[in-house]
Length: 161
Image (cartoon, rainbow, N blue to C red; front, side):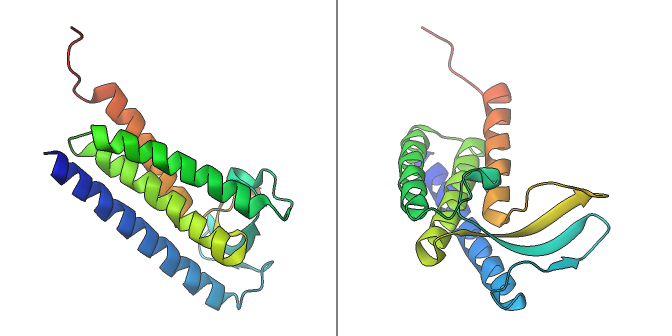
């Protein structure tokens, strides 16, 4: 059972990283590596190329010279903790969720190492109110964390001894 859980997580990691990096390559070509333009797709979604040098939601987005290194090391530490948790998990939901979070973290680390910043491009909005611009790796992290919460609430657990 554990082997199947680890395989499921690995598939999730690979799928998230491949889709994330492919979408970022496409968006970089589409915008010709030039941030600042907005392309409306629907009444609630734009494409908008930005480079996030900070952490989630643009916090510390100051393009500091050590940001890429610091946030990459932080991501590696978090991924190591998730791998340890994954090693002890079984079932379907939790390994898939952990795999999605790891895949998202790896996708963003690839950006930091390759470009010094994370490529974000999905701009959801409601009228003039815009959420933070994000990418598929960020979406995978959010969905994965949400699935972890669901698993913690409804997942089967052994009775305490």
